[in-house]
Length: 361
Image (cartoon, rainbow, N blue to C red; front, side, top):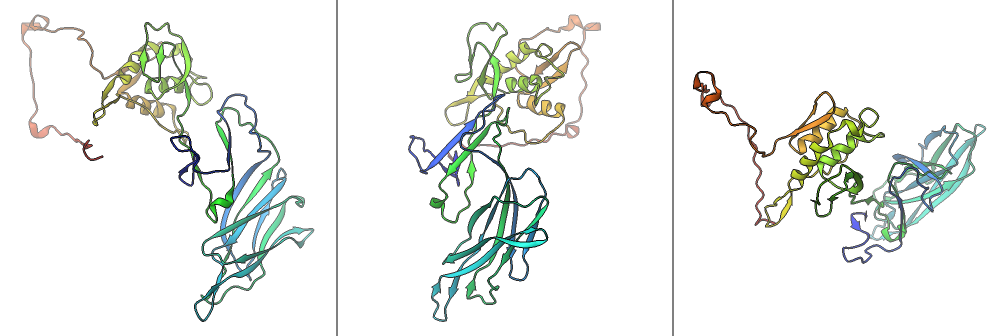
């Protein structure tokens, strides 16, 4: 996990960022809600400037919303004197709800200090009017008319909060609690380095060493792998996000995939003096697409084609194999082969070559 592009824990297990609490679920069905997260929120990003003569108004319509979180702040906050000194300043904002046609002030906010970068703060409103209702942010302080006074205010976003604990079955979900004070005025962002889904792989397969022990009895076990053959098997047979409701495990030629998987796992030179698997698949499917297009993309990774042979889905891979038959002159009518050629200028090819210099990092 990375917060603002900094790993929370380094490779030696030491904390780079302190005061971080992480809870997660891996995507089982069913799974318990995250501990410490008692509500779900949907944020609406605004990013609009609030001016003295132009309050910003929005409407809340959902009956399920229990609370509202308002995020607001200033772009800068300072006043420059004639001598060039930069002094603290202040600005006043109001958050108002419309109740029975009358605007009522819920929060009277004053931001003080000398701020040289964007600064954001938040407040949460619990006592909401009946829906639908309007909410607005009003700037009480007059707008600055000179470059000496920097005090632009903005309404960054508002979040509709529902007090419900959700487990998100079948979905990996993570919750993060962090002390925002140590980041100052920075927006806190998070990123994750993920391995991905747990697939069904052959029972005699070690995904860490990419080796197959003995003969395979056709049984599977759950494990992480980026072998494209078993990624393809999962997409064909999973009932939720794959073709499992149309194609069962018996309708996929697992023995053909077994041979393809072994070829994909063979170590080949990586160009830097070591080895790497011949073919791997590390992908995020973030949009809904036609099943055949996804299948074709997966198969292209391992140089094969999906083929329906009338009984099941099988696969033909372009890989070295033993010769199937030897043709001689005795197999040809008349005992002679006939050859035809095209002119060299009529043979069109497009070749793209990429070279990684192992001596150049």
